[in-house]
Image 1 (tube, helix red, strand yellow):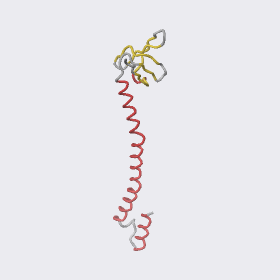
Image 2 (spheres, rainbow, N blue to C red):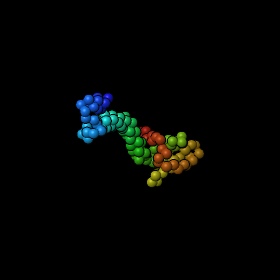
Image 3 (spheres, rainbow, N blue to C red):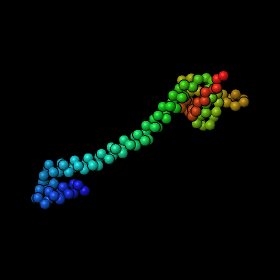
Image 4 (tube, rainbow, N blue to C red):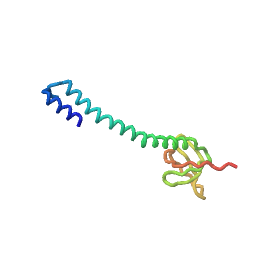
Length: 119
C-alpha cells in the first residue's frame, strides 16, 4: 500500500516511477524488505519451535544408544525386548524370551535402553 501512495504522489508531481530510477529502486527495495523480512522471521520461528527440539531429541537418543553396555535391556522399534549380550560396531546381539533366542539388530533400530537396577 505504501508503494502505491508513493507512486501516486510522484504521478501528481509529474515524475513517474518508470522514468525516475531512484524512485523505482526505492519502491522495489521497500517491496523486498516488506516481503522478505516476514519470511525470514517465519523461518526463524519455525527453526526454534520445530527443528531445534527435534535435534535435541535425536542427540539424546543417540547418546543413550552409545552408552548402552552388555547386560542392559533394550526395546527395538519393532517391539523386540531383550538383554544385550554382545555389542559389535553398529550392531547389538540381544537375548530374548525363555528359550534365550539371540537376535542381532542394528543400533539405529533401538528405541529404548533400560539400565538394570544395581543393588
